[in-house]
Structures are given as C-alpha cells and as structure tokens.
Amino acid sequence: MKRSNDAQQQDDNKKPRYSTGNHNDVYAQYAMMPQYSQGNPFSQGANSAAYGAFAQPNAAMYGMGYGNPQAMMAGQYAGAYPQAFNPAAGGGSAMQAEPLRSLYLGNFSKDMDPHDVLKCVHTGLVDSFRTMPEKSCAFLTFVEPAAAQMFYQECLGKKLTVGETEIKVGWGKPSRMPPARKLQIQNGATRNVYLGRLTETDTEESIQAAVSQFGPIEQIKLIREKNIAFVHFLNITAASNCVSALSIDPVWKTKRVNYGKDHCADLVDQYNPIAAYGNPYHAVAVGYNPYTGLDPYNMNAAALQANNAPTQRTLYFGNIHPEATCEDLCNIIRGGALYQIRYFPEKHIAFVTFMDAETAMTVHNHASTTGFIIKGRKARVGWGKPSQIPASMLLAFQTGATRNIYLGGIDDRFTVEKLKADCIEFGEIELVNICKEKSCAFVNFTNLNSAVAALQGLKKFKSDYADLKINYGKDRCSNPWKVMKKGKAPGNNTSATNTKKPDEPSNDNTKPEAANAEAGQTS
Image (cartoon, rainbow, N blue to C red; front, top):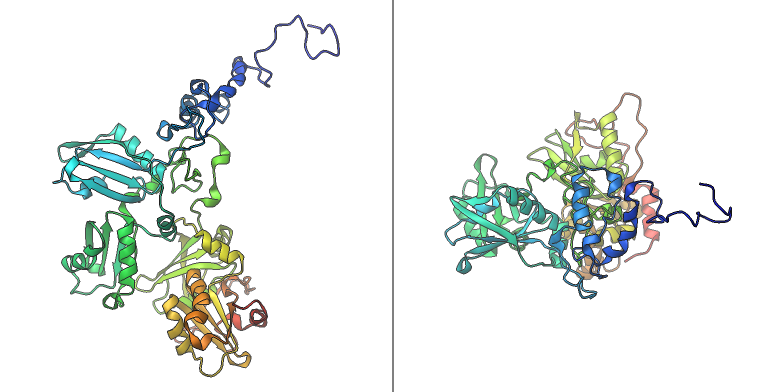
C-alpha cells in the first residue's frame, strides 16, 4: 500500500505492528516481553518485577531452532536453572544468592561406608564429604557448582543406592569456598594424597597410622609392585594438611609426597561439548561469580570467562632417557617462560607447564614437526591436564618474576654446593650456574613459586646474602629457538656421560643480555 505521505514512516491507516523490533515472523510480538524478564525469581540479578514467567532467554531462542534442549531449558527458566533461585528477586534487595555446591544425602546410616557413595561420583572434584550419623544423613560438597548440578541430574535419572538402601538426594545450603582453600585448589590440591618411593616396611596399617591424624579417610590404596600409595581423605583440608606436614617430616624426607587425582573426577573428560556446557573441566568453562552462583544453562556468551578457566598449558614428555636430568629437559625447551617443570625419573616422564597457553601450543607443534631428542632418544610429547596459574603468580610474572634468581656481587665463599644448600629450602632446584668472571650466579628453580619465595627470603633469613644484589634473571627456556641444520632435531645428542658442549655454557643466563639483570631493580 502506498503511503499517503512520503515523510511518514508508516501509513496511519495501517494496523500497527506489535513490535518495533526487526522481526519478519509470527514471533515478532515477543520482542516486547524482555521488559518483564527483569524480575525472574530464578535469575542472578537483583532487579525485581514480578513477571518471571514472561522472561525471555538471553540468547535468541527462536534463532537457535526448535529441538535444541538448551534453548528449551533457557526459555522455561529465562536462561537460569532453578537451583540458583534468588530469594531477593521478590523484594528488590541487592542481596544475591550464594552458589549451590552441597548435596543432601538422606537415609545414610552410621553403618554405611562413605566410599560406597563416593565411588558412584564421577562428575568433578569433591571438596568434602560430611556424615551426620545422629540424623542418618550426609552432605556431599563439590568444588564446582556445575559438578554438583551434573551429579544431581544423574541421580534424578538413576537412583543412588548403597546395598539395598536408596539414598535420597537433595540440595543442601548454599556456601562459598574460603579464599585460602580456593588458592590451594588452584595450586593443584585435591583430597587425594600420592605417596611414592615407599619401602617394604610401608604397609596400609603403617600409612594409616601416619596420616589418620590429619582427618577422616575414605580409603588407602597401596600398589606394592610400584611402591606407591594413594590416600583419599574425606575433605581437601585434611589432604592439604597431610601434604604440608609430611613434606617437612624427616621420616618422609626420602619419599615423594604430592597430590593425586580425585577418583570422583575420573570421567569428566568424557563429556561431549554439548553435555559439558558448564562442566568445570571443559576447555571453555562457564564463568561464575562467587557471590551470585553459577548458571550451567546460561545462554549469554558474555558469561563465558575462558581466561579464568583451566587452560591447556601443560605438556607431557615421555620416553625420556633414564640418565636424563631436569637440566637436560630445560636445555631443549625454548619459546616461552615456564611456570613449573615436574620430572619423574623413575617413570621417565615429565610435565612442563608454561605461563601462557600460546607458548605451550607452539612447543607442541614444534615437537610434532621437528621433535625433541634428549641424549639420543626422541621424546614423546603430548598434552597434560588443563590447569590455571594462581593470580598471585600471574601478577608476579607481569612484574618480571621468573623461575631464575640472579645473585650479583658474590665472592669465593659462594660455591655451587653452598647455593644449593641455602636455596633448597625454598623449593626444588633445577640448575645452579656461577659466572666467576662477572662475580654473579644464577639459581634456576623448577617452580616459579619457589623463585618468588627465594627472592623474598634470602635477604630476610640469610645474613650472607644481605649485601648481594638479588633479582630475577632470564629464564633460558624463553629464549628463541636455535636455528638447526636441515634434518637435525633440536635436543641433546651427546652421550649420557657428557651433557654439555665444550664451547657452550650450561646455562644461557651467562650471556651478556642475562647478566644485565644486575643493572635492574634489586630487592
């Protein structure tokens, strides 16, 4: 129909549209409804009208197509699942809900073993398992709210039973994780403690007697043929106390004590990308605010905080020569600074964690195309477990921290043995290199945390280092790749008895550009 006036946007005689939105289908009328969605009682926001039933999902529901289960769930609950119910939405308060990480387990009698329940959990890391025999119940708390949600959904489809008793599963009270425990988990803490280099005198009874003082235990698994054991506590706090205490115990000094993998998180990598939406171990995790909770069905792409999620930054090195050392590994790695390197000589494997994921990808591609050779043997390189670096270490790295400590102005008193003896208390040492002609030394740790602690502690606790210039040196692993001859793989091709070239120093930090760290800001 021709307009009566060319200046008019639309004809006055025409029936007005339901919406000013740019829609050409029958659902254009729904574009006016988001104004009612602010008061959805299941949303994470604090704004409140009383029209949650009319709310629209954050993403274009109709643009996703019918039959999409996430879109259908989003349409029903306005992009949020009801476990994040916000009681403040009805009153207009600025209070926001805490995340739901705990599940209530009813009909759990005092005769039941917690392991009978925990062996059925495979959706994520468990923070704690607390029993209340007087009330015949227990509470299972996960590290991530998404893991709790996935296990709850599993129990809705398949009943949780212990023997012939059906366990009732419901939601517990919302709770926030203490910042100290969150930092421990970011550093790799789990409720499983790994014990290595055990002897024939170490039995399950002796291990239980040594670790039972730290907290309740789910199970102890001793693998005699490998002389290792795994102790699963019922909470992460007990495991953290155990690792901290045994690491400095003289009786356990010759043994290896570290965190193992929680068996409750053994199947998280098997979730497909659609089912893993909100899975805390997925490559792109759903970000959540610790004060508002997590929405596993959130359709808003802005909620994805991939930079805070665990990232593929760790590489696995296998088939390492039996006589190779941690120094040999660091001599062949180039391209970016390391966060840590963990070498297991008895297993001939190592895990190398880089400060950024791009460097890890570059090194992995280099290994796939050129390869790494250590003492005449080609190493296998693959991906390790996704991980994240603590915020404090990221901040330290941005201000110049590396795993290498520079010591300037040393004299003949400072030998390799003395430097190792003085610095070993801060962490495992990869290499100590002394440059006598420049009166300086470099101490390379296997972990950035150890270097940060050494920089702060040497002058504070060691009187011999009070007059020295102490600063961070250059991590030789961040040097660019060396130009190799065609057909020759980078690596250490020398014999097992000689690991250094005569004309090449054992540490790239002796080069002039690394020695310039003396001119930098000293601690």
